[in-house]
Each structure stands twice: as C-alpha cells, then as structure tokens.
Length: 391
Image 1 (cartoon, one colour):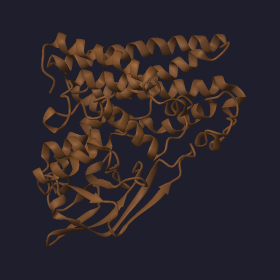
Image 2: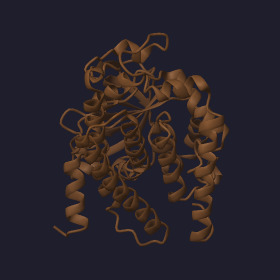
Image 3: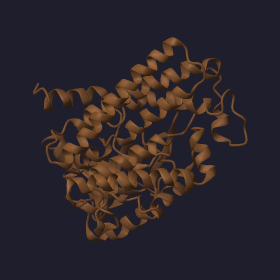
Image 4: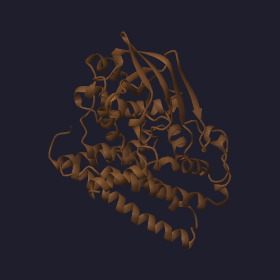
C-alpha cells in the first residue's frame, strides 16, 4: 500500500496523470497509437508490446506491493492510471495476469508459486485467461459444475467454461473448480492454475456480433493438473474469487471510456439541435459520474467508504457509455451502417466512411455486453439495495 498523507497521495496521483499524458503524446509508438485511435483490432503481439511499454515506464504492476516488484500504488493512483489511459483511447490493460491472478498468487499462493509465476507476469512472458463463468453459472458463480477429483499428486479436471476472453492466446488459465459437493456450494470450490497446453483442453471460439474473436468456450476433458498448482487451501476458492472480483470492479477505465467516447461525439461535424441537447445531457451525467468516482476514491483513502461505490460507478458508467456509443453510431449516419470488419484487422485497407467509423461501430456492438460482464447491472442493483438501502 502506498504510504504518506492523503495530500501526498493526491499529489502523486496528479504527477502520474501528467506523466501518462506525456507518455501518450511522446512515447507510445505511432503504429500502435494509430491502430488504437482507429479502434482497430489489436492482436496478441500488440497487447504484449503494450504491456512491455507499460512495464518499461514502471506502471505495469505498480499497484502491486514493492516486495513483489510493484510500486505500492494507492487506490487513487491506480484509478487515475486506468482513467487517464482510457481517456486517451489507449489499448486495454488486459487484467488477467497483472490485476487478477497476480494479486491472488502473491496474497494466497505458496512461495514456489510466487517464484514461478509472478516474474513471468511482470515480464508478460505468460498470457493468462480467467476460467470462471459456465453455462448456468455466470452471475451465480457458486453454481459452477466443473469438477476436480484428487488422484494422487494430481487433480483430474472435467467441465466447461464460457465467455473466456482471449483463451485462444492463453498460456495459463486460473480456474474455479468444484472439489467437494457436500455442504454449502461456496465451500466446495477451489482455485487451480492450469497449463493451457495440457492434454484434454479444447478451445472453441464464440462468435460475437462485432466480428472479432474475443471470447471462447473452454472444454476440459479429464485434464491432469498438479496439486502443486492449487492456490491456497482446497475448498477456499470462493474467498479468493471474491478477492479477485473486488479487483475486477475497479471502475477507472469505464470513466475514461465515457469521456473518450463523449469527446469523439463532440468532434463530429455539424451536430443537429437534438444531438447537441443529448451531448449536454451526457456532459452533465459524465460530470456526475466523475465526481462520484473521485469522491469514492477519496473516501477509500480516508477509510470511510461503504463498499457499494464500485457497484454504483460500474452501473452508471456502463449504461452511460452504451448510450454515448449508440449516439455516436446515430451521428455517423450512413457511415454507421457501412460495417467493414476487414478494415478493423488490416491497417492497409481503407475504411468505409470516416477514418474511425468502423471502430466506433465495433465498440458499440461489443460494449452491449458491458452491463453484463464484471457483474451484471441487475447484480449491481442488488448490491446497492442491500448495502445502501438495507433491503
């Protein structure tokens, strides 16, 4: 955890914001910046280059404790980092290694696991995927059925995971599995690290309407996983999953995405009177979202948060982003109808319509799912009802 007074943490966060702006303007390679500005599809090599650039700046795992190679950022510094990158339209900081499994390993893992996995996450040598959701076990994660049966010094794992982002690239899968069917469903879940090259693993793409291969089914058919790859205690995976999900719902990137999309909408030529009024409404809601988000970070710094702020920011941010993205497509007019998937993958192919029209449509289509992944809007409303209203 970052040390110092609240004022010192705020000052560091503002210096970080200025450093990110300089990085985006002067350090980020032109080719990667161009693809990002056009909202083009990025491949695995692009993301590895991006993560290595962030690591070179000392930012890739700066939110980790210093003992594990981080800088011990405060929650505010981490939020500013995600927010500012997203405002500049930078590539996604893929979270599965640096934000999700890495902190689980250094918090709950064995010394051998820390030594084996953490350096390769820091260096981007290993690409990770998240094996949580299953058919019938998405928001209700305790209903998962993928089973791990102990067999000597291995588990034999069988089941199915779905919506597994970038599993086609992954070297490793951190996976929730059922190791016990007695008692409460939450008490029989364990957290395994699974080598994606293991025999018995099949990855099948799930088609999405943006024409891009994001998500997959992962089938596990009697996959042998060493018991040494169990994180923490058998049956304690639910605790580790909740720890990870708290990291997943950090909302800085969504705030930045809202502001980035709104800036693009304002830049369109000659908006109609109706669109100008809509932009004004979006501006007000964006200001309110930003104020709420940074008030939540201040409350966290001062130790007076109520635990529901992340749900509120996620709920309002995703819904506002979807409305702005829809307005962007409306404002593009005929160019918003001309949907050229190939132009998103090839830098040498001229796009149809404005330079980034295809990417705008792609983002609009993909982020229809933003109110589902990371905890659906219905789940967020239930959290708010329970924690704020006491219902």
